[in-house]
Image 1 (cartoon, rainbow, N blue to C red):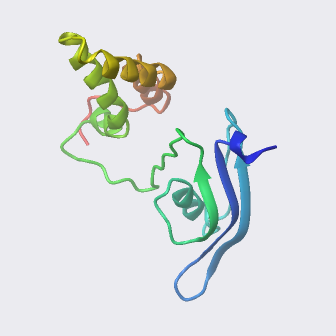
Image 2 (image 1 turned 120 degrees about the vertical axis):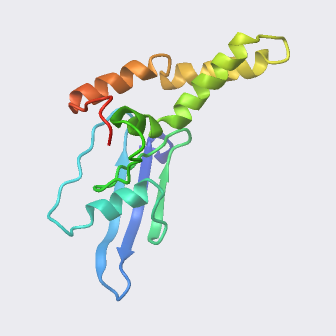
Length: 155
């Protein structure tokens, strides 16, 4: 299968901690569109290190690792830093703020539509359609309900 068909590709990736401790060596992974992947291992096996590399957070490794064009790899740390001034829902929405910004800009343009903004609005609509953002709030609600998160509870 050609590598351009993968949504994520990793080849010969190795990670070593300072002091020479190898976390993992020569990993090769390829993910096809739509698959569900689980990363399983004992404590200290390098699961979090692998995921940080995949998300582009950790760049201190050897080998090749990339997500396909238009693919974004998210990473939620085991101990996330949350904004205590926000509610649970507010913190969740921080994770989708780039997507919300697309919707907000589209709505801003829709309120004052003109020929000058038509092209930008069409481009934004294509992004919204491609990312299925029209019901972003409902998607967040479903995810929060599945995780049993109390939306308006303060942190």
